[in-house]
Length: 149
Image (cartoon, rainbow, N blue to C red; front, side, top):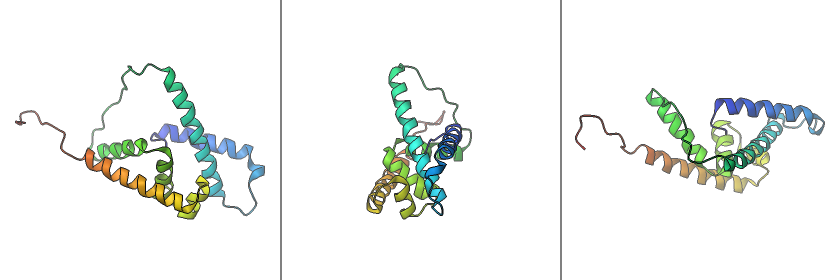
């Protein structure tokens, strides 16, 4: 969901902190994994909203500093994560829960508190957007020094 290992670790910590504080709200015999992912999803949404508010205060003219990956597979992973991060949050959450976290449709719909049909729609749109983004990113863009354009 976060696109960053460090942010993911922070999100997990925030999730566990919230879960401990709300342990009395967990139903005995309930789906602990689903409950924790619901908390994580809500914590993620809160952090995205806080980040957006903070970003509005920053100067957009500052460049983003990133060191490019050294290996081709790291480039592909970076492109996939970048494409995933550009999805609307609702589609990204559906894709992450189904494709990366291996939730069933019913579990993911419960976590996101939406009907299964809505989940399937978001998932289909998210997957299609990822396919388009990845096919655009794989088109030839590199010019090798010494080659004629």
